[in-house]
Length: 372
Figure (spheres, rainbow, N blue to C red):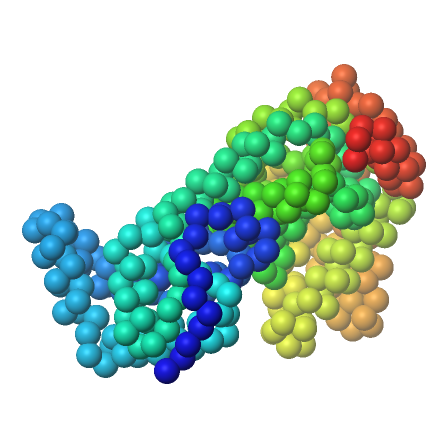
């Protein structure tokens, strides 16, 4: 028998997230995919099909009939198999907790089966719903703190600067997307709920560590397929703005390194040289194709031809400099005019402009003068 030091069930949601306590989610896989929490493993009591059958029974015949049906579906060797999986996970994370949707029947039943197998393991009182409610309240509370927005043209290093600041929140990293038509990364974007949960946990930890303001990048409401919480987006529309004005050649060099050289390396490391190159080629073509209407047909065709010539040269020689032949006019004719137009609407909120180093120095002094 596996024995543990007895720990009680918990409602200390703050400690769960501050200390990265591991969790076992016993909800069905479809529920888990819609939203869960960091450091959570899904080991369901019922799979999607079983959950659907029991749910239909509950609606038609009531709770007792649904419970009886659930026991008949998850029985014998299937019950033993799932119990073994829980026991193995408990052994790997003895300080963790388990939860279901409301902390009710499913998590209590898993607790009971574990107890019968000689394992006492606590659960989250209130389950997923209570944890999620706590994180939503955390987000709302975090929005009461002052905020500074970092703006600047594409390639000026906004994300780099955000990550150098103790109070910086890298929204693009949380969303696994860089916010433009070329913004996808090789990591799948989280569900909307997962994105919000991870954002809330990061803000909770930073506040607990003494953070009294936020520094975030100038973003639109959506980053790829994820949307900023409305309270955050609204706060960003009122916050003071600092603008990085780096030289054009510095910006081009950054973009070439990030979107060309690094993406090729990432694709080939992930998929192998042959498949990786093909994926990289499609990624760049898709980025241009996604904005073809805004570019206009003539410019789109010109840039696509230059992209294909640059790819051929890069494939043959390994040198990526030819990509500047389409990257430079893309900035000059599309990204820079678009961002200048957007920035004009924020001019009254701009409190400082300078190059990367000057903006960084300003933000560090600004933070110290405002109690951080």
